[in-house]
Length: 144
Image (cartoon, rainbow, N blue to C red; front, side, top):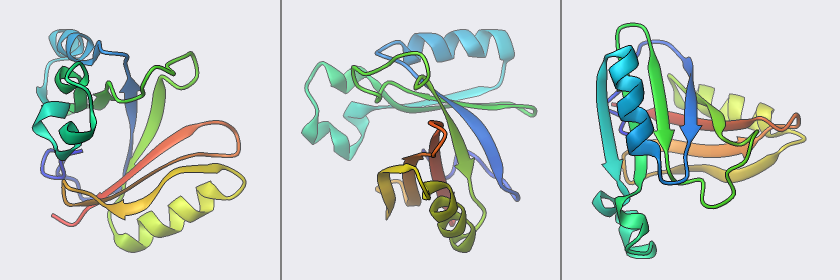
């Protein structure tokens, strides 16, 4: 997630779609249907490229489609485990350190933390979890 892509003043929850190599195609399709500005970052354009295969380098690490009414995000980085139920996550874009820490901790109770909150190469606090009801959550807070 590029912290400078989404400029917000309040917390939002946005859909985050997961694809197996079809993110570029799907997000371009959604842009043609919904309009807005589409940004995409390939794996090859990130520090993750050192740990991924050359086949993965053209996959989309993160994409964002933003218009005045919607924010839709997507990625190819789910791996080969895409199935009904994990193809979408709720992305909580937080407004403060306090908020991201509090809500992450609360939703993690009885669930499974997949990626603990940490500082990322894109300059944000980020973490991922599956809550006790099986829903996937992605958290992001950028101070910028």
